[in-house]
Amino acid sequence: MRRLRRFRLPHPLVLLVVCVFIAAAASWVLPAGRFERHDDPATGRSVVVPGTYHRVAPAPVGPFQAVVAIPKGLEAAADVVFLVFLVGGAFTVVEQTGALRRAVGRLVQAMARRETWVIPIVSAAFALGGLTENMQEEIIAFVPILLVLARQLGFDALTACAMSVGSAAVGAAFSPINPFQVQIAQKLAQLQPGSGGLFRTAFLLLALTLWTWAIVRHGARVRAARVAVGPAAGETEAELAAAEAEVAAEQPLGWRLTVVLLLVAAAFVMLVVGLQVLGWGFDELSALFLVMGVAAGLIAGLGIAGTTNAFVEGFRGMTTAALLIGFARAISVVLEEGQVLDTLVHGLFAPLAGLPVAASAAAMMAAQALVHVPVPSVSGQAVLTMPILVPLSDLLGLSRQVTVLAYQYGAGLTELLTPTNGALMAILAAAGVGFDEWLRFAVRWVVLLALLGLVAMGVAVAVGL
Image (cartoon, rainbow, N blue to C red; front, top):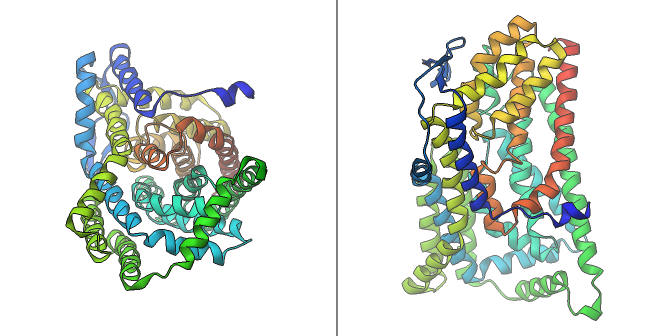
């Protein structure tokens, strides 16, 4: 255990570059192959045609090509990269106005001696975002506020990440309605969208209860450890944060800072409306936060120069987070150029045909988890794997609903652990949480959630879902 605590992963950018070269090496070792694809009117996406895997001419990716894939990945992820920069800039402006500190200071005073209540409340809010619209990259916008809140309540940055991206990922993995995951998979499996909703909701509640309890447990330990430092060592971080919150809460907001806070609130309302009603993408969200940041700086009296300098400072602070997203995308670029992505999928799923029904369900979930490392898009994974697994499940006598569950739990829970998930890596980087630190917290709970998923599939098989 002590060795595990001392274990340190390399910097996330180094880790992703290593993954890029591993993907390139795979293109020299694995045979090149592809599935045929066709446009599916039910999902509006290009999906795999089952039984059409065939070898193609080798296309090994050389070392220089692998390096070229990194700027290609940044280009492919440009909309998310610019969102990260502009969110960072906008909230640096808001932070320099002092509005966030004062607002959070008042909230901290209101929650005195009830700090741990914040964890289930915030976790439930982000879980709702995950289960309704697969919220991930959008969470980057919330990181500055969550960090201020966590610090002043005596928690650490890892608690903020677990409440946000962690809860959203768990909500998405067990969701009965996630349009980018379960609904696409059910359409490809020719099931009624939303079918099995009550069953999924029951296990969703169990999963969220387990994950929230894990965060509360961690948060309580952090607070207890900080208090245990004792007065002999001077003021603890928790005491400093409490004093800072008290000073901030006593300062009047004034009309300028009140308007700034209303602007921030209006931006998040527009974020939800834009995503759910107006069909916005990342470019529109970037523009939204750019407008919010500029307006906040000018209204608060920072002036053009002060607002510009704050944006630049924010850009600087988000550089690593933005680069991580592009570097993660480069792995998929290499696998696609090397023509081995379909080979990996074919090789993982072909052996399942010889397994008993119960074992095949568990093996499908494990295979989906492995596929999600090189294919970090849950919707992309659905259109790649479900057309292959549905006919296979019919031959095995396995319910198509259980096949969808195996995809949900396998891909969804891997979102919490894989370094190829650019959104996760960016959020951790923005919060200043090391990937190894995150893994030490998350792995054990993801294993328990995976066991819960296996139980859910076993129950589904038993009741004939």
